[in-house]
Image (cartoon, rainbow, N blue to C red; front, side, top):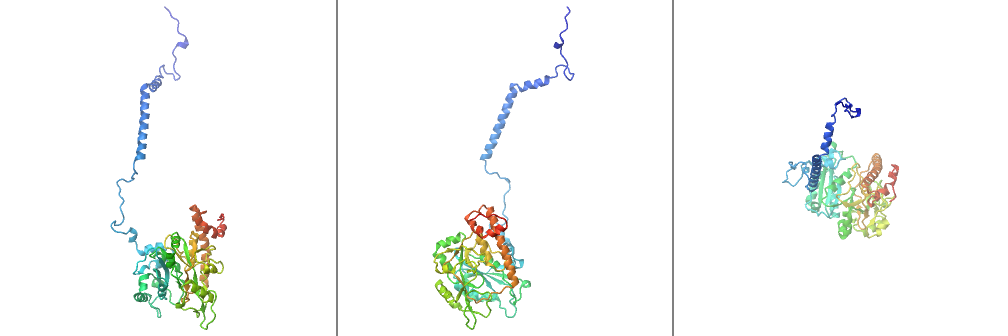
Length: 465
């Protein structure tokens, strides 16, 4: 029986690419696999495994001890562990000193002999050592120091001109003789020797400014106590027992431990001519060489009452290093009647008296200057140290040692250097306080007040203290 053909819409057609029907079977197979129960089970199992694995490692990381980067590496010491010193002890003294005193030339640092003479007594750490410089032409100053200061003394002896010229004494043999004949020198004095090489020594007839700032640092560094009296190297002597004052007032010692600086006011014996001319009333830098002191060594005042009497009579004058004509760091009329500590308010950058301070944790004297104790104290002041004036202690200059006069050129160079140093110190300490976030702290108040003009010139805005 004949059947009519099917409609066109019911007949199978070729795909778009001309293929035969059945070309989409693979995609449909993948779809059926994804929707199958087995695929879902595998996916859920994989996700669960990853979660468990991650949690396990996280817990292991949190509870595990500190990881050792090199578990099979054992740090070895570079020196014998049985010996009580470190590898630094194997370095030569000249190498260590050249790093410590970087501004000094090698001909100086290579010829420093710490503890060339060591005292027989062992001082306690809480005592106050006198740190000073002894000129090779006046070793008799050691005798005066041990008579005026009962504690340990750390002194630097610098031999910088030949001792074999006619008329020149041998300081080493003289020192040995003095030490053998004086038990106080044996028990109190440590000598640190500096010998300038023969090729660098100056003739005996010339006068060159000593490197006193280097000497101060050296004497202070090798002092065997925690506190030092930084005595000016101009021949001044401590007239009173400063150590006893600190023992009598424990609160002073506590201030000293916390970084405060104690000023020891200075005085000079008046000078007069051999003809008996009236003594001068102020220290005169142009004093002629033929003047002699009004008071002999045995007549020097040893207590405040006697000192005030001599000042009233004109036999003792005020030292320019303590009692400035321009800015009165220490007012004499106030000091004469005070019985307790007084703080210095108006600080002068040229203030340079003798001071008592910590041996460590304090800034060192800048060695760019030959002899400038004011530079040492100015940096201490800017760093935040408070200055207190001792009410009953003082130093006295007998006038017996004549200081070498600097030439006009040397004075000009030193003045200009110190002016630049003033600006540099202000910027250095201001930057340090800013970096540490302490500019508004009480410790930075000295820098804020003293350096306003310098910082203003450099365009820095300073808030009022």
